[in-house]
Length: 170
Image (tube, rainbow, N blue to C red):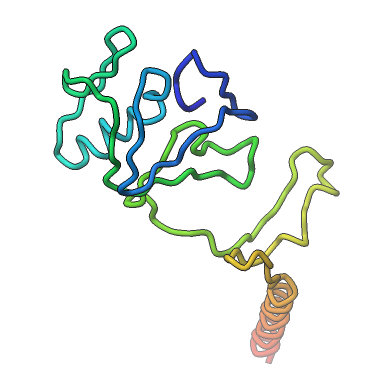
């Protein structure tokens, strides 16, 4: 589990309180919290910006490129992403923070919802299927519209098939 530090009691279900960095935010850095920020400093605000940043520990001191690091000011916003299938999602609990420039989209639609902990017949969560995902917190369901369109498709397909058979028989 993120961060990869055996001194922390974090696991997939529980984790110590932590800070999600924002652009311009300055945080105090020490050997206890560097594991949360090391990848950000070395990769996202380092090599991805063509800057060499190397974090090392020397005893209880944190060093950035060999120089003591007591605080750090972040250059961009970061996000903590969680999957909606909590126990089966590889998300920020595994890979850590995600910089904004790595976010490529946003969820807009739930097309399928299935609870793998229930029996097959009761596992489908129809109240969540074909619903929108938006900031208001109230999902809008399009399941009925989808079922009408699906039924219409099969009716038209059957009519076209019957017309084709009638034409061939004539």
